Length: 194
Image (tube, rainbow, N blue to C red; front, top):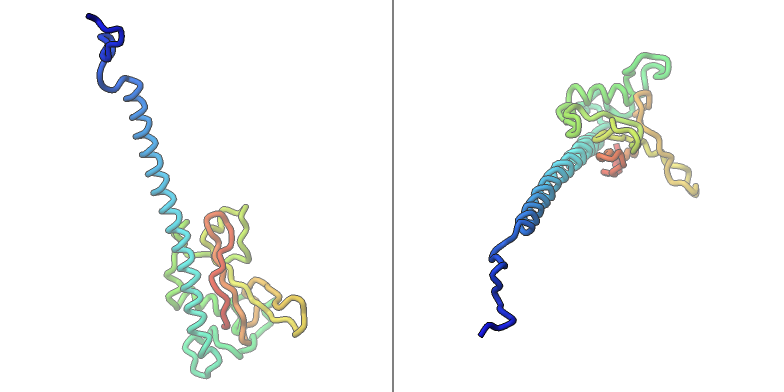
């Protein structure tokens, strides 16, 4: 006798259908896309980390130099402390001795900082006054700011100004180092005495 509930009807095929194969191809495509996006994000993250290492290299150099910067036999004469600018920086062509411009020119020509590379553009990291998210040209740039202490009791402990070429460096300075990330947002590296 035929049973009305035959478990294997004759028109049913065993195994995956065309829809099942299409779904498996779709899942494989999704897996490939997710892996590819993961690799891209990993590479971009490494670029940000390399930019942070550039800022840390600046911090190491400035920290090491700050200990002996006011000694008579300081080995980096352009960055020596206690040297008043020889000319008026506003009226003289840069670099004027005793200013940040002369020290920066020396750093970019004579120290290991000249070998740093901005991983986003594969060129020397530029120094910018601030990180601006709308400016796509400052990815990986370095911001150096002079933190001038205000008088005791002031509601603001520091006045923050970008370190520019005409700034005198004849005194002990508080310097903040910041790096601009891929989106142009600041990543604070450190504050140090120079």
